[in-house]
Length: 303
Picture 1 (tube, rainbow, N blue to C red):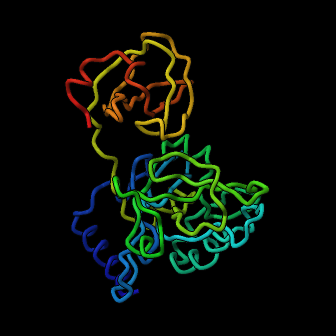
Picture 2 (cartoon, one colour):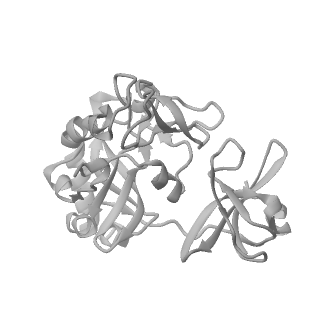
């Protein structure tokens, strides 16, 4: 509680002095990060809870979809290996119980809007597979020190953690989904497994965020990219290797210009992270370099 009030006082002091970026009181945009609520993260109970930062996935009208920037905790999906509806899951009960009341003040809670996922009018939830793929989140995530201590499985090669995926009803054998360390969305994890992290998500009122002056880190400057041109259909994946799930195959005309952000060789196969427009929306995903003509990407050696 002391840390929370110190943070609020510091923010108000900076705001009065004109030292807080304009985005701190401006409209949220996809790509921003906003600070709402507090939860133990540095694994040091003696210094109080730390502020939670959320990634803005979507912002439209007065609503914005947020997901925690890191996995905040670790727990089983359910305590028995049976098919279980989201409404009865351990994670949902934790989100709407301990987490909701410990992490958020009444002011924080007033900014949340209900989602209606899984037949529940809850303000807190976790994303399902379709949402994870559509927002380009099929990748291992950063994990707090507290969640590491709680048991999140961490990749030795990338330091990322695996995290749970929402299913409205699990499979009959008690299996459910999770995002693996290297990004593949698996369908085969037992609900009783205890090494997956939890990344809470919520819809919030943009006006509420503005009204309460929550700190916002604005969008990063545009990333450097080069241009390539398709030479066949684009079969895409969530990451630069066959370990990642195929997300979609896009039938776009040969010669379509795409932005290339990164170039990576995995097990001898070159991959590129591309962005292009499809159906009126921007898509960003990985595809084999063989599908895109661009010598510039390789010369720049994009990591």
